Length: 411
Image 1 (cartoon, helix red, strand yellow):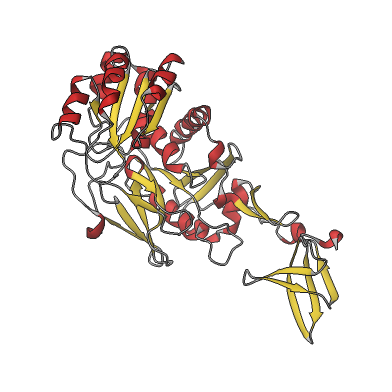
Image 2: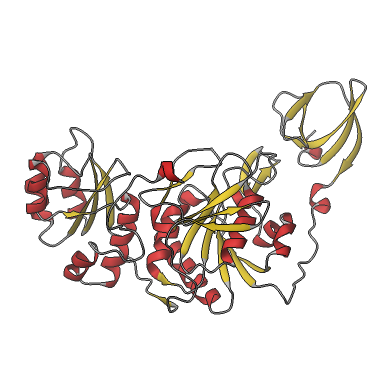
């Protein structure tokens, strides 16, 4: 049994022929992953044919059309670059960017693709150093290509996209794309997401965005501004939602057309530049009833000088935090955001909010907590404290809107 795990086999069982890939089994039965994605176990069977899967899946070379725009795909790993590891049965990140392109031949009708594997990690292993390395690679690529696509694991994709939105001034599209389900599953969203990202990368856009399924069907993808998007479901294909701002547009999969929904930055509106220093000693703290301010003092004692508070409602923590906050804000930057996500901070309605403002806490307006975190990292890495304190209140790349509407029902 062990010698055929991971190989494609044809067997005869119960008077029928079955084909599939042999999965690991702890029961002694033969477990096949059929072409429809389902696993089936067999006890009595006859092996008719065994085929080496790796030889079967060799990809032909990618040909280029001089009439099409050139796009760079930078792979960082994640589910979109994953398939089942048939030795263990687990989904692992193990394929290069070239193999991703080979799996989606429709890309050849949209653009010419060059691809590189920058690193091959799951998104929970992303660190600030990876953001910086990626920003530099995208910066170099933007000098040569009409657009850049970054394949990324979905769990922390919004963090990385936000980081690049602040670090890079881009005259061209920088498109982050992922998948909720790996490409060897029948319900995979990888191919459609990648096609829609290629259409976005060749559009007249000029900013960093995230492109993912808009619905659970294979009908269209949304183009989300990088600093206004969050993953809102663990497994649904339409997990990504724009918060406090509508998606910039939607890409219709079958017609290959883009319909723009909201104001966006256009191609060539900005000059290409990079400012890639990031201060890592910034922390996001989620307040809950009864949480003591000791946690602030702990991080402060460790040298942290950037704090994002994820407060309740309009932006509150308990009043017993006030004295500690007053001390911390003397030489640190503390920004208040909300656990509610939709809506904006207003600390002038209730007494607690007014106390927080007097203690030196800065209102985060309608920024997502994680975007505020990345913004503080970037500000404290590139500016002195007082200038960072002023800039955190200003809209830099679309992370703050002047007024907040509830958009979800409208698009």
